[in-house]
Image 1 (spheres, rainbow, N blue to C red):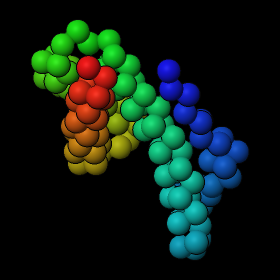
Image 2: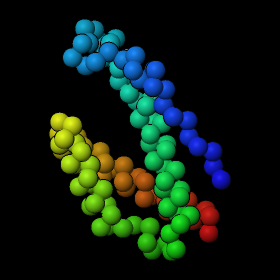
Image 3: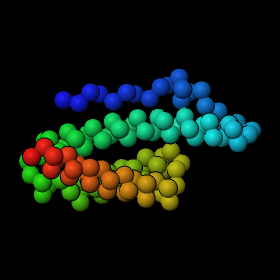
Length: 113
């Protein structure tokens, strides 16, 4: 069993300057860096779910699930719309994340069988 990934540091994340309050490029870069650290921790945790899926799925041919891919993208697009994030960013980012996640799940599947 793998150890749980470290959660992002909420204090570190909350110390960022809000985008509309940034006055310098240093503020902008600091905010981006803090968000990136949080995103890395969340993506690491998401990868843990791909490891679990590889462990649970009964055969390699069910690793890629087109219906599930479209379900994930639809949910992300709805969440993005609710948050005010354009599809021009959300959809391609998540499609790439899903593709990379599937590739990782195949790697884990192959290593553990």
